[in-house]
Amino acid sequence: MAEHGVTVAHRIEAGGPALAVREAGQGAPVVFLHGFASTGAMWRLAGLMRVEGLRAIAPDQRGHGASGKPHGADDYGLAMVDDVLRVLDALGIEAAHLAGYSMGAEIALSTAARHPGRVLSVVAAGSGWSGPAEAESYARIGRLMGASRDFTEAVRQMRPGMDPKGVEAMLRLLAAHGIEDSDQDMAALAACAGGMAEVVTLSGADIAGIGVPVLGLAGERDGERARIEAMAGVVPDFRMEVLEGRDHLDAVTDPAFAAAVTGFLREVALDR
Image (cartoon, rainbow, N blue to C red; front, side, top):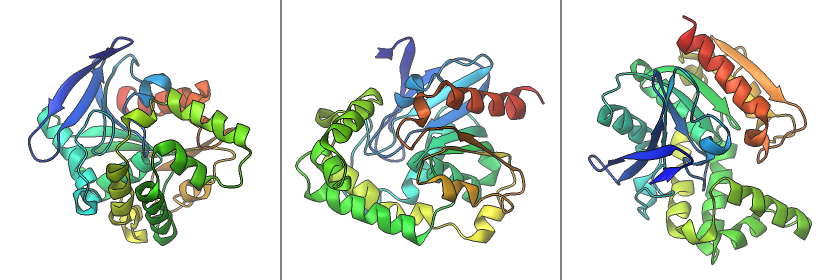
């Protein structure tokens, strides 16, 4: 299967649920980790699957897209960190750069904190240093997913005060990210959200121990922005970029998003 020249090149079966992995380009390896309820296709939308000098690797994380979708909360959490290592091991990569959005950023940071020898740098976009409040937010999302007939209904429940036209506009944007009702397994999404507390509750010592360069990236109007900014002065090698006028959903469609990620990766992966 191919998406505009980006091939779904691997299906990793060993060690857990099957993982479908897109790959494009050659050079320094970068594992791109998508957000909750999205797929690896979001990185093509962001314009980051074909960057000269980079080997882009974009799995559909468990519970999402064409990957396996177990229904138990115990099948998620830190198992999603382990999946990053499964991808690296299957592709014969000792260490890689990680770039994650939202849930993917939280998984990237957790991987860097727990497996420092496998991570060369981190892009934490759309989320950052989370904690109990974010864990409770995921628990609420999990309950909504489990109680909803489909993903559209769950989104409307998550945004009860939004104007109906605003909800529809948001759903169209989510569809552009590769998110369709027919592709979603609501029980898997509920289980994934329910297991995220294991991932997001990193201590100050965990964050301070991340010894690789970290780029924090957020839309100006993104409610997650404060969690990214919280890493300043804690992560030793941290820098931050804010995308003017953007929010959590539309930041990745801004050409400035791809420019920021590409510029960072060129600095840490190609210019050294």
